[in-house]
Structures are given as C-alpha cells and as structure tokens.
Image (cartoon, rainbow, N blue to C red):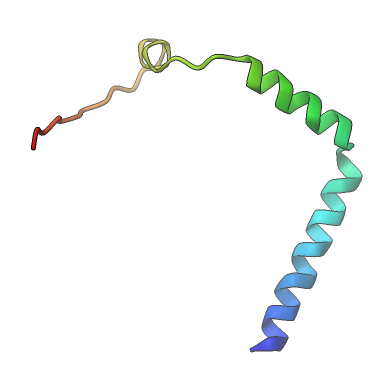
Length: 60
C-alpha cells in the first residue's frame, strides 16, 4: 500500500512542479485579485444563461 501511495505522491509532486514552472506566483495572485473584484449575481447569471433552474421550497 505504501508503494502505491508513494507513487501517487511523487506523480502529484511532478505535476505541481510543472505547473509552478508555467505560472509565476505574482501572475496567479493577480488573477485571483481580478476574480475577487467581480461581484457575482445569481439573478444576472440566470438571466444571461440559456439554462434554467427547477427548484422547490419546502417549509418545515
């Protein structure tokens, strides 16, 4: 079991290292800040989407 887990950890570490080379920390932080500045609206998302929601509200 330990061997499989060790393989998974090693593989994930390689993936993380590869992603670190592709993106610099400052670039990721900038992307996060841009996303945080946006205020999300459920109403706007539903009105602009071609999909709808079927929902039911039950009282206790």
